[in-house]
Amino acid sequence: MTAPVIVIGVGPDGLLARPIPQDAQAIAGGKRHLAAHAPGTVPTIPIAGDLNAVLERIAAVPGPVAVLASGDPGWFGILRRLAELDRPLEVHPAASSVAGAFARIGMTWEDARVVSAHGRNRRPAVATGLAGGKVAILTDTENTPASIAQELLDSGCGPRNVVVAARLGHEDETIVHCDLTEAAGRGFADPNVMLILDQADTAGPTLLAHSRTTALWGRPVEDFEHRDGQITKPAVRAAVLAGLGPGPGRLLWDVGCGSGSVAVEAAALGAGVIAIDDDAAQVERTRANAAAHDVRLGAVQGRAPAALETLPDPDAVFIGGGGADLEAIIDVATTRCRDRIVIALATIERVGPVMNRLEAAGWTASGQLIEVAELVPLGDGHRLAPRNPVLLVQGVHP
Image 1 (cartoon, rainbow, N blue to C red):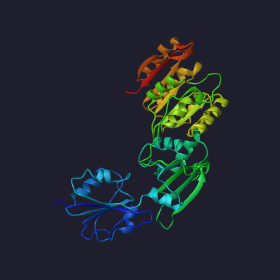
Image 2: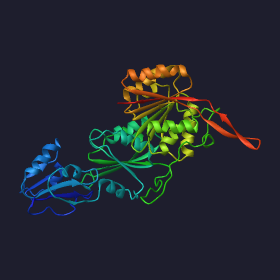
Image 3: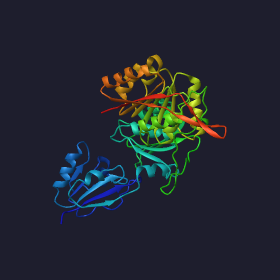
Image 4: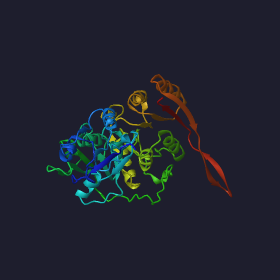
């Protein structure tokens, strides 16, 4: 029978989930885990650098191999890669670092959103930080709490409490309480977990597996505060959201956000949203609509495309206003956006140049005319009252 790989979690208290088997012929793990737990009489395999090389060394050991991993190895851990080995796996999880961080501050976390920026693009972490009222982020030496906090500030994120739990289980463990501005201006020991907590309500909504939640979009115009009818109408809004594909971990720009109806509904679907408008009153209106619908988003006052320079790169962009700067805004979007751009136009003459601009940048462009007529009472019946048609152009990155 092929010898097993025994994966042992190391908890936030620094203790192993189970002892290292006495018959282990090698022990693999990070430098700090090996220093703390390897007996010195068994060959070690440091987990660092090229994981393919690490897996090859583990596979070459004929007998049992113990692998030491932080927390729960099956939760953003090394278990996914170890499963590639043609060997039996025995997994003994410990409490995760996120569980340890929340435990240190005495807070429940069944309603927390958890995302990893460890060895990954930090865009989903920033998006989740914008959208969530209780968020835990696994960091690394590049995607640090300071860099994530700065991107949230640049995105117009509202006030947040921040807790950074560093070197859990070590003698030099620290738990730092601060806000985004303080977090952006200081360093933290590695490894660490970053918690982002809503200042108004750190408890947040309860999101349990058995709860039933209803996501609504295309809400009536009356559900939003707006100015002189300057709001994306429900049917158009629904089509825009379908084109953008908002969801948890996705980061969206709403350029020329106006009342923020698109931004609010995208945030309600779980996306991290940055709403941008040159009109300070519209930015405040967007914030008010977000608060009224109990969603969180970033709001930035400034004229695009210049206002886009300091924002984190998005997954998708909605351009609902651009005026004379529309083509320059499209150029920025095609350069920095990951996969989808939706542009709302009021005049036919702009469709051709906009589609040409997208295609020249290597995007696939398509368009549709959306015409809506609403039923309104007329005598003892109803008539159709047409709304102004809207042209939607969509760009998809190949």
